[in-house]
Length: 502
Image (cartoon, rainbow, N blue to C red; front, side, top):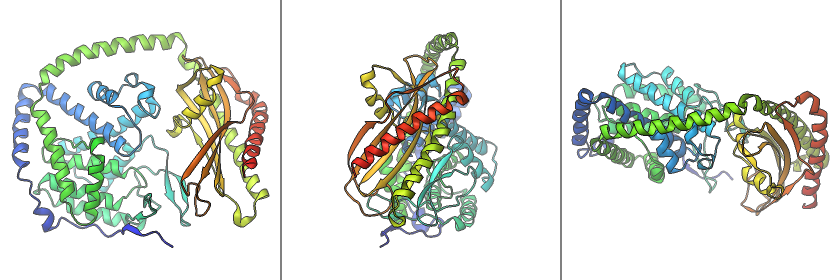
């Protein structure tokens, strides 16, 4: 039986008379005050105004990714990045759930997208489908793949087409199994054209109203395979800037309010989203009006000197250890990861075809991970925990590469992981390969997909007797045979442990 639909897709609509009747009278005077204050700042302290705008843009750049669950970042580090800029050395590894270098790349992409619309507004460039594609390409520049649903209803990893409309439906499923329908791929182009035509005619409408309308209607279409929320918030900022307001920052603490307002808009009531945007804009303007820009600039100079001193010491230390030469070990790990992917995929496919009947054959999921896939943080806890008795320091700051294979039969799922991680508190140029399995127990045997039911238990079991060690001067071709023998032994242990629990 099909799951009930929370929201069924319908074609986007222009602003209604009901929308235009939303009362924004309490915000307009504040907006005028900001325009006058901004005009004075341009004359008396243009540098201070620019600095304030840059910090607001950095805040938006950070928060938009947190809203999308692309990464987590603690408050202290967030404030440092907003104040100083997106500098990798300001990010402690424990402050986020992804590699600091990857985080900085994503933040810079999001910042670049906002600067693009800022330039668009300043130069009075028309907003076209081509500009929309350009925004999406910038925002997803460091995202390789996304999840999609194929024609058979299977969830699959697909390459993310940057700057191009979606090819697959991207209707999210909720925890209760219900579905939220977005625009089918075949109607996206015409729906976007309608949206842009209406937007072009709303030059005299209140920017808060237009931004909420555009944000919601764009999310109704969901034109890209992924990245739609990020694009929608940049579009909101574009409308605000055209109306001489401030960029709109939806803080992580307002995530629930934000989602609820979007759901109300799905039911035809845009007022909640308009009011949320109005509240956020009011708060931003009040902060701007209260700002002592000159005092901030004096503090900025002092803090910048401290950051530069810290960077100087860190980079001196990196040069001393011949950093780039030692990082050659990552290339060896990447090569062996590719070897492992092929071997593991063949072994798991062979298992399912030889052991199971066709109608009970479990699906095998194999994927690579690492800095180039944006998921280096996966399995850090498991690897650290399993290696605690060895007294070695597992260093995840310099790149972590892995292959994951998963299959599920009845209530038991086997997850087999081969990991390459650095060893040592400093960069040593030494990595070790280890392997382990996660045996996960679920409360449901029926249904579809590898995540059906609720997980009720998990066991972590190492599956290698000794780690497979590589260094910065290892030649991958010369150790490939030895690695395959080590890997074959690890796979055999993994499958036996799983079979013993069936």
